[in-house]
Length: 278
Image (tube, rainbow, N blue to C red; front, side, top):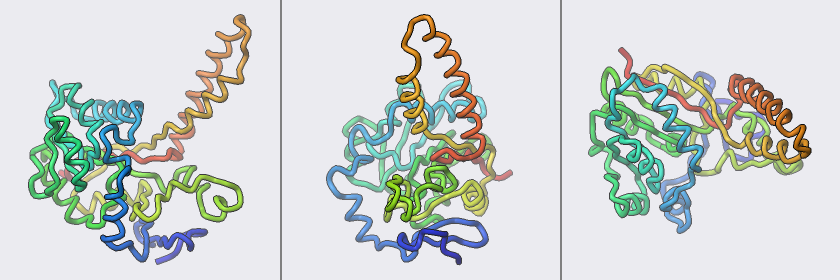
């Protein structure tokens, strides 16, 4: 094992074979449970922590990469938190189910009338689509979790969508402690100590392959870049005659920047789409 440059203070190590970055030593279950059960842990609240654009984006990708259902099918949000995404999926006519280990999250979802439980052995199946959005990095037992998820996936047409922080993102590259300490770079990417694993496209694919899954698509996404675009628009021309031209020019440049940025795999988050290996 080799320790990534600049990560000594974080207790991170990297596997030479798959390049998975992980915490070592791993926090105890009692430490993690205390953190997750703290009042105000936002992912378990009724409104959760996912923005409306993020929810819309994820559901649009499921629609794009799903193998063409004539009508919306069985959907499982694994790590559903407060159920905001489940509510939107239900509005779009998916038949929704959720899973979460947090009693608070389960209680919140059930109060909304959502079918959510916290027992891996009781995950409903078969599922047309399963979403694991920002939960795999919190999982300590990959084998038990992914075995249950793969078992619940429809053998031929089911798709698993896994969203995790991207260890090769621009944010991650600029987030070592030394830069955070002396240059004020935002270090929250690491979410120490609750992010137990930090994935690249390579390590995510290898983990999935070890559980009988093949990758059909891999992309990166992030909406933080849009804040820079808003600043850019605010300082643009204000005269009515030039405003339309500026808007058209800036839109074209934004599309180009996003295409290059995400095409280079620099987005904050990875989104992998998987199916059972044939």
